[in-house]
Length: 96
Image 1 (tube, one colour):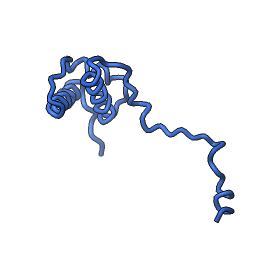
Image 2: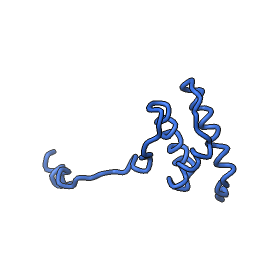
Image 3: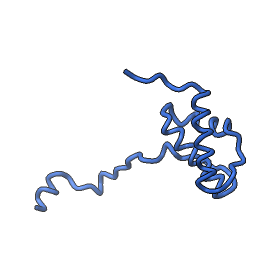
Image 4: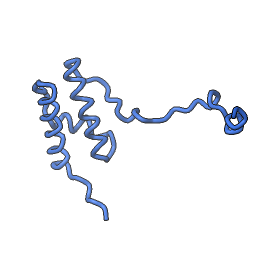
């Protein structure tokens, strides 16, 4: 069985708590409406964890730079292979 996806109100509630926790962790009061945090995370995918990561990145930017820049959360963890530099399996075996 799978859980039903969260609705907008439930996601908003989670992001509101993230904003509160971020404020407590860094001893600051984020000056952004939680609906703006929701809006910034909307196109980051449907997974709640990805939206939370986007919200934390946005809050980090506001805390560090006093302004929000580009959220690059979707670029995290994407492997980049450069095949020319990787040895083949045979090359690895022959080195033994």
